[in-house]
Image (tube, rainbow, N blue to C red; front, side, top):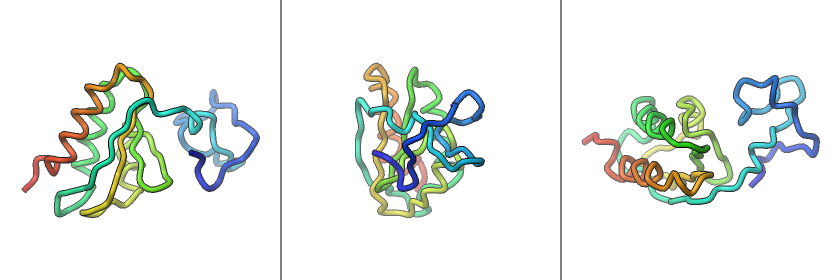
Length: 125
């Protein structure tokens, strides 16, 4: 799945700090957007406040334990699940359908822990 602003020319990812973002000088997207998702789960945001800083931080902490890449997706946008600000930038209020995916099948346990956290409303009442 390509973002809306994609280009056929690939960017040298060695000079970009976070290769999941576009290169500010050219606007081209990096090759990591093409990486396949091995496992994914789709669910709805259940807590009243939606996805906010504290809940995004919980997802990011869990995603950081994965061996491979973990993605957080809403509609046609896919972001790195270890980046709190990228997840918050998706704007996910209560009832939003989101998908969490992992690039490495060995990270199925991490995926399930993230899904449990989201489905429990991030432990908030």
